[in-house]
Amino acid sequence: MTTRTAAQHRAEAKEAYDAFLASCPARHVLSVLSDKWVGLVVSALGERPKRYSELRREIAGVSQKMLTQTLRSLEREGLVQRTVTAEVPVRVDYRLTDLGGSLLPVLQALKTWSEQHVDAMAAARERYDSAPDGAAPDVPRPGSVPAR
Image (cartoon, rainbow, N blue to C red):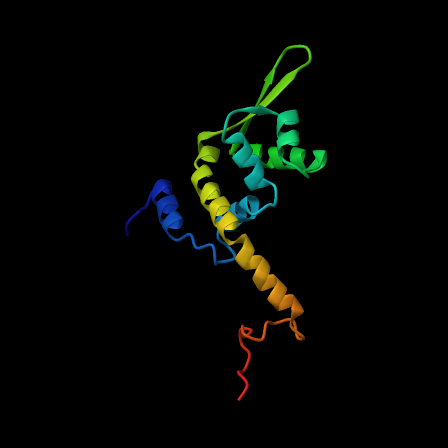
Protein backbone atom coordinates (compact mmCIF):
# COMPACT_ATOMS: atom_id res chain seq x y z
CA MET A 1 0.00 0.00 0.00
CA THR A 2 1.29 3.45 -0.91
CA THR A 3 1.17 6.13 1.73
CA ARG A 4 0.34 9.61 0.48
CA THR A 5 1.31 12.84 2.15
CA ALA A 6 -1.15 15.54 3.14
CA ALA A 7 0.20 17.68 0.29
CA GLN A 8 -0.56 14.88 -2.18
CA HIS A 9 -4.09 14.56 -0.80
CA ARG A 10 -4.62 18.32 -1.21
CA ALA A 11 -3.25 18.25 -4.76
CA GLU A 12 -5.56 15.39 -5.70
CA ALA A 13 -8.55 17.13 -4.12
CA LYS A 14 -7.71 20.34 -5.97
CA GLU A 15 -7.68 18.49 -9.29
CA ALA A 16 -11.11 17.10 -8.43
CA TYR A 17 -12.70 20.53 -7.77
CA ASP A 18 -15.92 20.81 -9.72
CA ALA A 19 -18.15 23.76 -8.87
CA PHE A 20 -21.17 21.82 -10.12
CA LEU A 21 -20.83 19.49 -7.13
CA ALA A 22 -22.58 20.72 -3.97
CA SER A 23 -19.62 19.74 -1.79
CA CYS A 24 -17.02 21.59 -3.86
CA PRO A 25 -15.20 24.38 -1.97
CA ALA A 26 -15.21 26.45 -5.18
CA ARG A 27 -18.93 27.01 -4.52
CA HIS A 28 -17.99 29.28 -1.63
CA VAL A 29 -15.60 31.23 -3.86
CA LEU A 30 -18.31 31.67 -6.49
CA SER A 31 -20.76 32.78 -3.81
CA VAL A 32 -18.36 35.47 -2.59
CA LEU A 33 -17.53 36.69 -6.09
CA SER A 34 -21.14 36.79 -7.26
CA ASP A 35 -22.13 39.35 -4.63
CA LYS A 36 -23.57 42.50 -6.20
CA TRP A 37 -20.93 44.84 -4.78
CA VAL A 38 -17.78 42.69 -4.88
CA GLY A 39 -16.96 43.32 -8.54
CA LEU A 40 -17.43 47.05 -8.16
CA VAL A 41 -15.30 47.28 -5.01
CA VAL A 42 -12.51 45.15 -6.47
CA SER A 43 -12.57 47.16 -9.71
CA ALA A 44 -12.49 50.46 -7.82
CA LEU A 45 -9.48 49.29 -5.81
CA GLY A 46 -7.73 48.13 -8.98
CA GLU A 47 -6.51 51.63 -9.74
CA ARG A 48 -4.85 52.31 -6.37
CA PRO A 49 -5.42 51.98 -2.62
CA LYS A 50 -8.38 54.03 -1.42
CA ARG A 51 -9.98 55.24 1.75
CA TYR A 52 -13.49 54.18 2.69
CA SER A 53 -14.95 57.60 1.85
CA GLU A 54 -13.37 57.51 -1.62
CA LEU A 55 -14.92 54.11 -2.31
CA ARG A 56 -18.30 55.30 -1.05
CA ARG A 57 -18.23 58.29 -3.42
CA GLU A 58 -17.01 56.24 -6.38
CA ILE A 59 -19.50 53.37 -6.10
CA ALA A 60 -22.88 54.99 -6.67
CA GLY A 61 -25.76 53.47 -4.76
CA VAL A 62 -23.81 51.43 -2.21
CA SER A 63 -24.97 51.95 1.36
CA GLN A 64 -22.54 52.38 4.23
CA LYS A 65 -23.66 49.03 5.64
CA MET A 66 -23.13 47.14 2.36
CA LEU A 67 -19.76 48.72 1.65
CA THR A 68 -18.57 47.84 5.16
CA GLN A 69 -19.85 44.25 4.84
CA THR A 70 -18.28 43.86 1.40
CA LEU A 71 -14.89 45.18 2.51
CA ARG A 72 -14.90 42.91 5.57
CA SER A 73 -15.81 39.91 3.45
CA LEU A 74 -13.09 40.68 0.90
CA GLU A 75 -10.55 41.14 3.69
CA ARG A 76 -11.58 37.81 5.26
CA GLU A 77 -11.18 36.04 1.91
CA GLY A 78 -7.70 37.50 1.36
CA LEU A 79 -8.67 39.74 -1.56
CA VAL A 80 -8.35 43.11 0.20
CA GLN A 81 -5.89 44.39 2.78
CA ARG A 82 -6.98 46.99 5.32
CA THR A 83 -4.25 49.27 6.67
CA VAL A 84 -4.79 51.52 9.68
CA THR A 85 -2.41 54.46 10.05
CA ALA A 86 -2.21 56.11 13.46
CA GLU A 87 -2.77 59.78 12.77
CA VAL A 88 -5.47 62.24 13.74
CA PRO A 89 -7.98 61.36 12.52
CA VAL A 90 -7.10 57.68 12.09
CA ARG A 91 -6.49 56.84 8.45
CA VAL A 92 -7.79 53.54 7.04
CA ASP A 93 -6.81 52.50 3.52
CA TYR A 94 -7.94 49.52 1.49
CA ARG A 95 -5.91 47.92 -1.27
CA LEU A 96 -6.09 44.75 -3.30
CA THR A 97 -3.83 41.89 -2.35
CA ASP A 98 -2.06 39.99 -5.13
CA LEU A 99 -4.93 37.50 -5.01
CA GLY A 100 -7.48 40.30 -5.34
CA GLY A 101 -5.50 41.86 -8.17
CA SER A 102 -5.64 38.58 -10.07
CA LEU A 103 -9.42 39.11 -10.37
CA LEU A 104 -9.05 42.35 -12.32
CA PRO A 105 -8.70 40.81 -15.82
CA VAL A 106 -11.73 38.60 -15.18
CA LEU A 107 -13.81 41.54 -13.98
CA GLN A 108 -12.65 43.71 -16.88
CA ALA A 109 -13.75 41.02 -19.33
CA LEU A 110 -17.15 40.77 -17.61
CA LYS A 111 -17.52 44.57 -17.61
CA THR A 112 -16.65 44.76 -21.31
CA TRP A 113 -19.05 41.93 -22.16
CA SER A 114 -21.82 43.62 -20.15
CA GLU A 115 -21.32 46.95 -21.90
CA GLN A 116 -21.32 45.28 -25.33
CA HIS A 117 -24.48 43.25 -24.67
CA VAL A 118 -26.62 45.49 -22.47
CA ASP A 119 -28.85 46.52 -25.41
CA ALA A 120 -29.36 42.94 -26.62
CA MET A 121 -30.29 41.80 -23.12
CA ALA A 122 -32.68 44.73 -22.64
CA ALA A 123 -34.37 43.86 -25.95
CA ALA A 124 -34.66 40.20 -24.94
CA ARG A 125 -36.17 41.22 -21.58
CA GLU A 126 -38.67 43.47 -23.33
CA ARG A 127 -39.70 40.68 -25.75
CA TYR A 128 -40.04 38.21 -22.91
CA ASP A 129 -42.04 40.56 -20.68
CA SER A 130 -44.42 41.61 -23.47
CA ALA A 131 -45.34 38.06 -24.52
CA PRO A 132 -48.69 36.78 -23.15
CA ASP A 133 -47.22 33.77 -21.34
CA GLY A 134 -43.97 35.47 -20.36
CA ALA A 135 -41.95 33.90 -23.18
CA ALA A 136 -41.20 35.59 -26.47
CA PRO A 137 -43.07 33.93 -29.34
CA ASP A 138 -39.88 33.55 -31.39
CA VAL A 139 -37.83 32.16 -28.49
CA PRO A 140 -39.13 28.80 -27.22
CA ARG A 141 -38.81 28.08 -23.52
CA PRO A 142 -36.56 25.17 -22.57
CA GLY A 143 -38.59 21.97 -22.36
CA SER A 144 -41.56 23.39 -24.25
CA VAL A 145 -43.18 21.44 -27.06
CA PRO A 146 -43.17 23.31 -30.39
CA ALA A 147 -46.59 24.07 -31.92
CA ARG A 148 -47.62 21.84 -34.83
